[in-house]
Image (tube, rainbow, N blue to C red; front, side, top):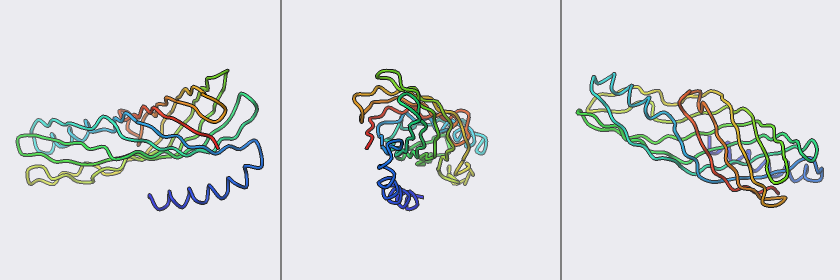
Amino acid sequence: MKKIFYYVCILSFIFLNNLKAQDDFTFGIDGGWGFLDLGADDTAQILANATSRTTSYTEDSGAFVIRPFIQYGLDENNAFEIGYFFTGDVSATYTNSSGSASEDYNASGFDLSYLYTLDEFTFKVGVHTSEVTGAATLNMGGTNVAVGGNTSGSGALVGLNYNLDKNTYVGLQQYSNVGGDDAADIIYLSYGYKF
């Protein structure tokens, strides 16, 4: 998946340099910290059911998020944007009386959004299709338990950017139902730059 992403980025840079001659297209990238809830509580419940033991869990609160995007401006205030986001790994540890197990998981996906700019603020609303990648099985006290591995699905996104100038902004976005899980969300604080 990461190799595919790198190839897409390289091709996008080449393609976008040709499009840059047209003022309607903008290429950019934002990055920052995402507060991730990607379903460790669901995995803990699966482990509890499989081992018939109360299972607790701890997880990282977040990870870095990177998001390259292409924006098409309709006019001064309205635009559409297509982006690809991916997160760093988030670790979760599950514990019950039979032992403990750990897994790393991350999220990635494509988003499509409509942007409306009013003075220094840009409001964003859209949809995403995403995947959460984690362990397919965990060994809890000698018992292998299938916990699902990858999940995928779609959801909504909303966001607000404060435009520092024409090319830079700070933003806050929320991706809901990440990986198709109703309880999985990413709240993402970012700094962005448009080329």
